[in-house]
Structures are given as structure tokens and as C-alpha cells.
Image: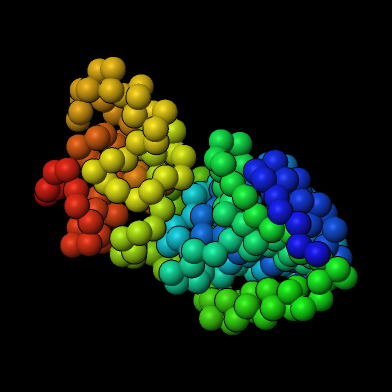
Length: 245
């Protein structure tokens, strides 16, 4: 029987699912910034040389994630266009959830999910596995090659490297704290950070930390909430506070 999970439950069962994998481990998440605790568990499974597949849906991965992925031997990383699903599966259990493999989400967001075991619900597990394998087949495997940290603060890019247009109803990031929020460059703060910003209302003068669209480090502001690449790729699809040049 499927089991409902709240935020803490998703984090707990995800850890157990990774630790319990003995044959295969498939992790599907649009955004990647994996917590140190989960990295340790995944690295342990990598040492066991089990089949590990990591599928993501953003065109860029931060340099620290690149270097960590490069250090693993058994993991295969793939890019899936228009991915929004979050699903984690081993040979005997699965989780379908709203939670990305993003450390901020595990600590700060309100998430929920459903936990399924093959033993208790063979049919449902089978349906999940079938869809997961479909996503695996339609994903493009990525060769991770970045191994050194450059002297600049610019994050490294992996193929496909060109900025990709996003869907209008997708998710974005708070430009101050990085929390996952509704995509809207006209309102790039989460509720908490907006209340803090509202005390001063200094628009373009106050420098924030994140790009609203890709979530990467960027000198953003209320008037310029995205990095240039994201603006250029999506200026015809989204409304922006200012026209950038």
C-alpha cells in the first residue's frame, strides 16, 4: 500500500531508498544541488558498482556538482528536456514527490510525496518503473569533464550549454535565498524575503545573490532578477521589469 510522506518523511525515505539500493538506483530531479549527506550515501553505492542513473532537466550544473559527479565511477548522468517530474527508485521501492534533489528544498520548502514498495504494491511499482525507464530512454547522456575549479567565480557549463527557453508556468528561484518559487521575473522573491526587502524598497540598488530562472549565483536585483543568458533565452516568453541591453 502506498504511504503519504510530508517534507520530513520524503527526506527520511529518500535516504533509506538510496541506502537500500543493491542493484539499481535511479534519481530523477530537474534541479541538482545534492546535500552532503545524500552525496555520501550515493558515493557509497558507487563503490558497490551498482547501476546508478541521475537524470536532471536544467542545462547547467554548478561546478561543485560537476566535480563531485566526475569523481564517481558507476554513475551515468543524463539530461531530459522539459523535465518536471521528481522520482527516486531502486529495485524494490520508489518515491514520487515534489522535492528536487536540492539541499535547500529539503530544509526550507514544504514538500510532499508518496512512497511505494514493490512487495506491497507490485502493480503500482511496475507502472512507476515503466515510466521511469521511458524517461531514461529519452534522456541524453552527458559526459562530465570538469575537474578543476577555475580562478573566476563563473560556474562551469556542460553540454548542452546554450540557454534553453523555459515554460511559462514553471518554477523559479528567490533571488535572495534561492528557495524554489513560482516563476515570475516581476515577483522574484519568496514571501519571507519580499517582506524583508519591502522595508527598504531600494529596487536596483540592493544586490541579491541568485538568478530567478536558473538559480545560479548572480548579481541580481528586483529590477534585474536574472542572469543575462536566462534573460536572452526567455525575453520573448516572460515579462521582465527592465529591458536589458
